[in-house]
Image (cartoon, rainbow, N blue to C red; front, side, top):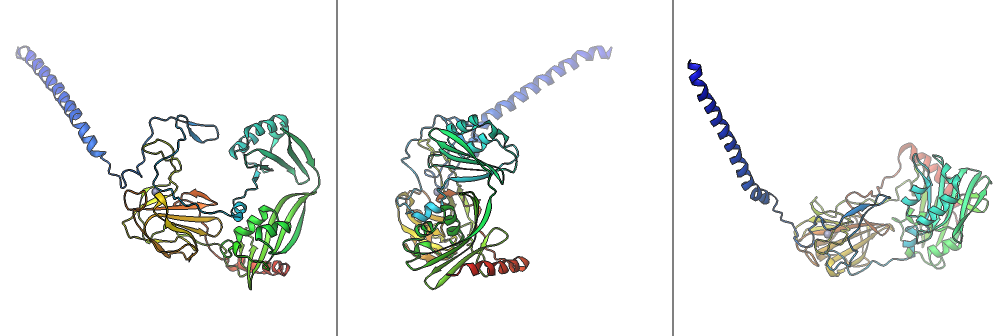
Length: 451
Ligand SMILES: [Zn+2]
């Protein structure tokens, strides 16, 4: 009986409980929605260090596509001229003939076939003109038979047009494809390659590059020499009457030079001799087995500092939406922080230069250049030799900069690279067994390097 009376009460209670539960959940949901926006806004308030110039924005108006060589290209983004930028100096660093040599303007590439490679993909990767690739691969179907480990090499002109292509099937079977008009013509060489040791000697009459060429050295070989000795010798300082002597191994296929290796070089500059001798590790050392390389600091600062803007070759401009590369790294440092040279070198620019503000550029050897911008004070002069760690300036907020920071760039072969990740030369001499082996090699090679 009692159960029958109680039953509707329980049902009523259940109904009431459910009703309040739903009401409660609804209340929480509404409260959440009401509070969410202001909470969220509060959390994302962003105070950039340098509000205008250094702010990166996401680009919603342009869509990107991945083209088949892996590069991302903007399809709607017009490459419009940038009217605003934080760190473009007005003064350009002057180049000379040695830059062309070091930059490897010969445009010759040697490549060893690896697993999964196809000729088409390799040449696309190296930016070879697509029409030339098409012409070559459709006319010569045998080029689909490249084997892992085989060597190929090719030469392009400055506009990426293929000039010659060679395929080494074996040491006495080389196919050569040469462009004649619009088409390629195949020929083959069946002569066994003969490695020859060659000694080339010369006097400086005008410049090292000109005289080395006149005496039969190729641009490639001159590039290897200038890179090997870049930290010891400024080739522009060589004068009439200075001398050079070079020992090389050249592999010849008939009349064609297929490979060349510099074994040793000696350059006499006034009364001083500079040597670079090849060791078994593939690097060059002086005749005492000391390294010819120069070391670098990662940061131009005594202490690590926060990076407020990283290296970004595809940075989008916050106003124009155009790609405005950020060719360096910004360190958030207060005004007056000492700025140090990251390596030994020569100051090439030290002046106020447009939006870069007080600006210093230092050349290190032939391949490396560093720049320092927005400085408060410059403490060096153009032409001055600086040592690694020398105080060259004080950081500041000059030029187009909206807050104190140091903009620092590293260029390798005249191209800006990320200074925080780039591989930098290390300077370590040989020791122990490898030093012993090297020194006995030095004896044989240096005896051929007399004048
Ligand atoms: Zn910057």
